[in-house]
Each structure stands twice: as C-alpha cells, then as structure tokens.
Length: 121
Length: 113
Image 1 (cartoon, rainbow over the protein chains, first blue to last red):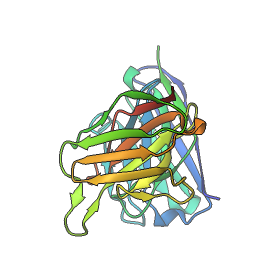
Image 2: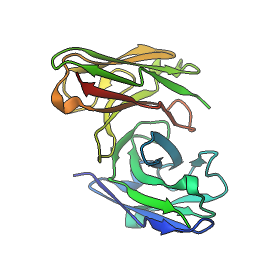
Image 3: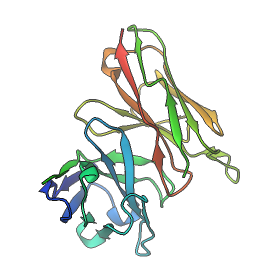
C-alpha cells in the first residue's frame, strides 16, 4: 500500500524555522516526483514546492515561499523534506506531501494526512 | 501564473440529483503536442487530505465511482456527479499541471439539499 506520513509540524514563532519530513512507503520512491501543498485553516489548497524524480533534482517553488523554503529528498531513505525559514503568520497551514505521477507535470496522488504548522508569537 | 476559477462557490443538491461544477483556467491547459488537457479534479472531505478523482480532464482514477465524470478542453472544464450520494458531501478542487507553477481552483463545496 502506498503511504505518505508527514511529521515535524508544530508551533513556531515568527521568524523561526521548522523542518518537515514525509516518509514514503509502498512504492519506488526515486521514480516519482514529490510535492508539498499547504492549506491554511478553512481555506483552499496552495501548491508550495516540487522536486523531480531521479538524481537530477529539478526544483520549483511558489513565489510566496521562494528564498525561504527549501525542498529536498533522500531517495535512500524514501523521504521528502521541507526546510522552512523566516516563517510568517501566513505560513500557518496544514502541510501535505503528495506524490506526483510521472516526472514533474502531473497530478498528485496520493496525499499524506498532513502536518500542522502554526506560526504565532 | 495560470489562475483557476470555479463556480459556484457552493451548491446544494438533492440525493440522486445531478451536481455540476465548473472550472476555468486563465489560459489554455491543452498541450498541443499530445492533445491532452493538464487538468485534475480532487475531492476533500472534512478532516481528510484531498483525493484524486479525475486526471487528463476526463480520465477517472481507478476506484472512483462512475457517477463522477470530467469533461471540457482548453480553458473550460466541468466535473459532474450524475447522482449525488450522501458520501459525496465534500469540497471539490480543480488543478492545472500544465506548468510547474501548479495552481488550484478555490474549491466548490457540495452539500445535500
């Protein structure tokens, strides 16, 4: 069974940092692109970042997080990461990791259950 | 960026009746080289992550009930639930994957009338 499990969320002060992890299982991790999508409380879905499959990691960010967030992956550990720096109140959201079907231009399936990040003083 | 819009924001439909959700992209998501529309639909129930329903605008994901169908091309798309069931109460999102700046529609909430 394909499974994605996020961790690392929590309460952090504005300007602080947090590192999210996504543990993948049930599929050949290095063959798929991976993505982070967030959802602010009561709001819609916002794509955050994507990283391509294989060893040549093409990386993309939403303008709202560019320069502050860093996506990475460890294929040996079947894990996806999101390093979040200079956090702001409007980064408060549930962060989902999602598998991409194919290299980069693809839909997301499945999604993890998400991890909540709260940025507040 | 490609901006996705959806209509209506919400709708209430009687059990067994048809529900129709529209999605519009600010530019075409039809890739001419393969004649595919880079458009997906997701369903999100309260407290759950989104679930893929439709990709390539009209291809139903495995295991998704046949009452869900997608149509449209270019910039205008439709998700239809042919006979609404109680378990279909959810928010539905469209998403374009034509560019690497992926974007989602704002969502349409579907309730029972």
